[in-house]
Image (cartoon, rainbow, N blue to C red; front, side, top):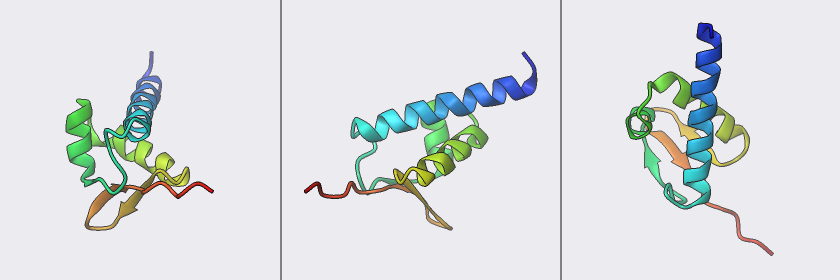
Length: 79
């Protein structure tokens, strides 16, 4: 396994863990924290966590807030 395979695996692990935490309300709507705090919680470096957060932001589940960290996005009311 070369370095890029490992990086992809860490990214996928971070992405899956964060998405599950959001969907299971472990990171409730409005949760705000730093990438470093989340990386520590997941036991990995900040790089794969950052990449996972970028993807979750694209999906509308997290928001990167410059100089304030990241926030899980409140769910929209269903009609």
